[in-house]
Amino acid sequence: MAEGLTAVTTRWGADRFAGLGLGSGRPLIIAGPCSVESEEQILEAARAVKVAGATALRGGAFKPRTSPRSFQGLGEEGLRLLALAREETGLPVVTEVMDTAQIDLVARYADVLQVGSRNMQNFALLKQVGRAGKPVLLKRGLSATLDEWLAAAEYIMDSGNDQVILCERGIRTFETCTRNTLDLSTAIVARKRSGLPVIIDPSHAAGRRDLIPALSRAALAAGVDGLMIEVHPDPDRALSDAAQQLDPGAFRALMQDLGLLPAAALESLAECRQEIDRLDEQLLALLSRRMEVARRVGRIKAGTGVPVFQEEREHALLDRLVRQAGPALRAEDVRAVWEAILACSRRLQEEL
Ligand code: PEP
Ligand code: MN
Image (cartoon, rainbow, N blue to C red):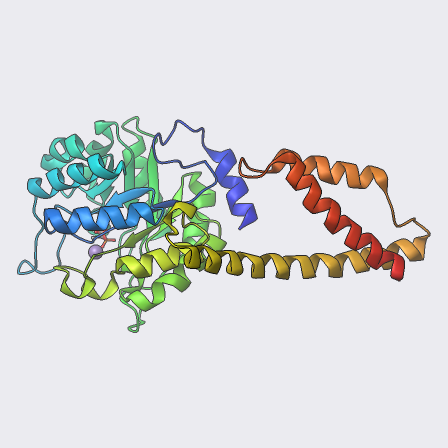
């Protein structure tokens, strides 16, 4: 994870994907319903994902449905509702454009234009979608190889728009227990080869909501730049992709599990304490591991005649941590905490 995040912060200037925060070191979390269905539905979804810490809102207005009998989306009305949700929540809007004839219309409402899996090789669309001057989210085709996917990205960039975000959303394989197969390895290679941000869509990859937390954790641990997750106020009644959408409570729990839930989302004292207990457990596990390493250091010092207390080393360590600490931690607090930790290490080493 650390390696991935380091790469994120150094790969793009803060202005390349303006407004999306790519390059900030925090993953891009695009969340929202599969389709925009009504004003009430999209506003409820937008509010829920916003409080839980999402960085952008998704919602399909023009839907690429396999069957012509399935819900096709609200069209321009859906775009208008997405813009309304952006106005209320401040979340940038990501939505799909299926046809060259829709580009101007969709770009009038959306902040990021999505090219869906089924259109990954719609070359007319690829050649023109970049001209709107907005970031383009390019989903990998259902059966596209890495080379085909990256060539599609090149078509977009050839129009002079370098704001392409790649999205792996599962590919067709012989496996039937999931809707598609999440191809995390190719996503990692795509990120290396292209120098572009790569996000993962576990919803369309799995097609079932129970797998979304594990796939999300795996993707972020692998160092990808973000996630796209389908969230619906009442998934079982969704007009599309009902089986794979999370309800707001499940999305919030996932964000908490990923360490991405804003503290402001914790409403009661009990909830805050639960989160503190969870964080303390993580701190305790890290401290135990740190002490094991300190003990090993003690043995090496004893074996080579190096004294336990190394003033320069301790100063350098404290200064580095103070520099790295985020705005929530004051320098004197960082010093106080680590002076206590260092004292424990020294005591342990002296006992050896
Ligand atoms: C979507 O994200 O709304 C969608 C239709 O996904 P995909 O193109 O990956 O099937
Ligand atoms: Mn969907």
